[in-house]
Length: 396
Image (cartoon, one colour):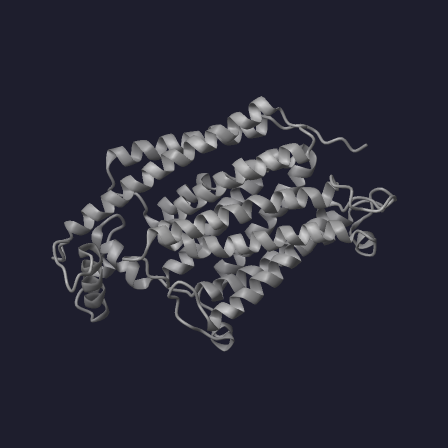
């Protein structure tokens, strides 16, 4: 599960990196979906084929021909909600930031998903420790909200003091002052007036924020934060349900399988789960090529095939997500899916990458740094307590 925590905390950062470099999210997600499925196939053909096939423990190929369709449908339903949830976060984090998106989604997954899995797993985890970890996640969410507000205030102050001469007191035709200054800055950058300054912009400065907005594929200055938060909470609900769906697929708590049919093992469940993710992800993103969301430019399948800029990072993101999800489910099958939700502490990884790759929080206030440290400590405490509550699933 430690490997799952690392992988699942890294792949969103790679997609954010590509979006900030101007690559269309539809192109990125199409590449991502390919390797996400490849990871499931690799796990199924290797770990799923280990050992001799037995009546109650068939291997991957044996289970493909068994009458286990109720479990297969649960697994595919899990893939459906995960794919929709990931698509929602892909657009949401451009509006409210990578960390806000991950913190809210991860916390909703832990609170809702962990509770559902605890009861589905017949309470094999220690409830006092398990729900202490859930409480730590809730505290971390509150701290992250304060961090976001503090960082937004710091950015507004940087823009108001920009050395490019754009001040927030300007208005034009009723446009919000903070929106007008960004449009003026972007227009000058596009015309080449401040191109030299833009190339020297340092992370954490107003010039850096303006330059970033000029590059990225989804424009966020002047956009509705409420719109982004709405997408985040919708994504959180979807992502809260995929783990319980896999739990039902592999353990048949609702007794949907016929007598004598063995439970779907985690490798086959993950395979069907990933096929569903792939079909939904590919289908929706081909649609978004021609009917894009949130102001993203239109594209075409031909344009996607000709776009190789950043393809390797999108493929890597898909592989990391696929392997991370597979490891999460394997850990959940042994120690309980409620404990496996500990890997949803994605901000531990994303905070590191956001600071290293994107320069987030540089030149911010001491208050913001203090809040950020406390938030990360709460996530570490949450992961530790959730893992400490691990039980052992009976195989009888």
